[in-house]
Image 1 (cartoon, rainbow, N blue to C red):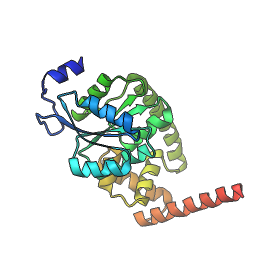
Image 2: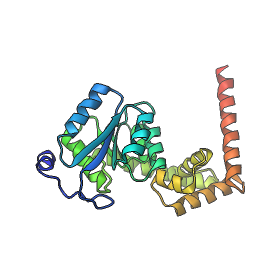
Image 3: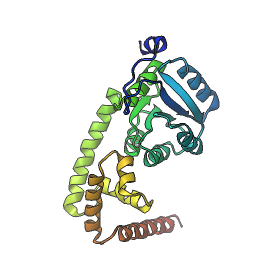
Image 4: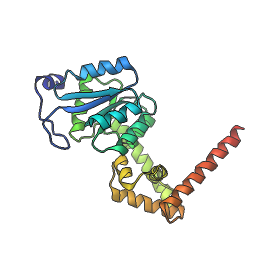
Length: 242
């Protein structure tokens, strides 16, 4: 249904900036035949303007800087795909990410969610479903198939129980560990907030709590503590493998 409607006319798509124009899209997939076929198919839709395509992280970041797309369609099967999603979110808030060809595996879905994807299209989705997801994401909606949503809700519930237990023992929660990891990469509160899709005030609260739990006074000291801990874990692994 979407396909016929989108081909007939250029609908008034309500984007985050409320503009009446085709949605600017880039496609990132490492198999060229697959990528070129998808680009050709998306060109059939008047509501979309495919402004570029590429195979990897380098291509994606270059295209984002050059073409300023509203939506980046990223094949989750490419190498380090979730890291790419995370880096795009840290780089710009103007490009929303659709993760496609997602396996219905909890680890993959959670990693995409935590990296900041705005929507998911599974391996068995049709082209019309992909286009529908692009349109909805450009209109600032979150797109998630019901089956995937159910898995995410179950995982969030389980994680909240684990985090509650961690808070009682003084251990870092899952979110606090995420924030600490971003601190070690040198990200600012604003960049962390954009990447995790949370407010800067929430990030500040997480930083405050993890500083208290690590018994340090500054972000730099927290980063140093995290790096020392990572070094000890690597040493322990090396001893076990020796």
